[in-house]
Amino acid sequence: MLTPPIYASITARGTISIPAPMRRRLHLDQPGAQVAITLRPDNVMELRPCLPTPSDAAPRWEEAIAASNPPIHIPTDEEIDEWLARTSPQSGS
Image 1 (cartoon, one colour):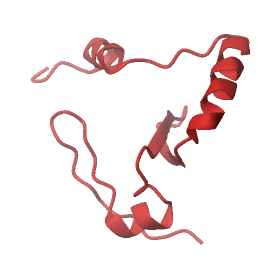
Image 2: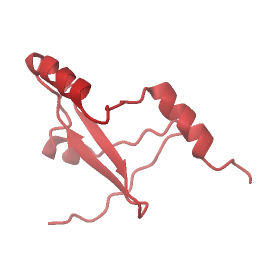
Image 3: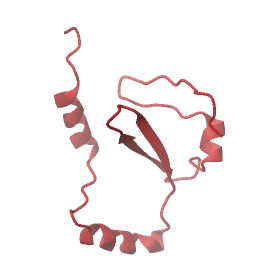
Image 4: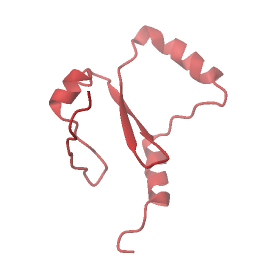
């Protein structure tokens, strides 16, 4: 069942707060939980919960990433900031 939209503010650094009831329902209140963000061709942004990986599974994930074809690159915060600076419209234009 689709829930009605909830509007969240975005800070100057791009931080979005996910309401507590949604975080609890999706287990995003667990330490290490993350959200995968995908921008679709129709400009719809999808957020998908990613739960923390148990520490004993980490070596298996590292092997899977190393063996992937094409290789998977997980961008750093600095790379994301650089990409945003290159692709965002200039303010005041």
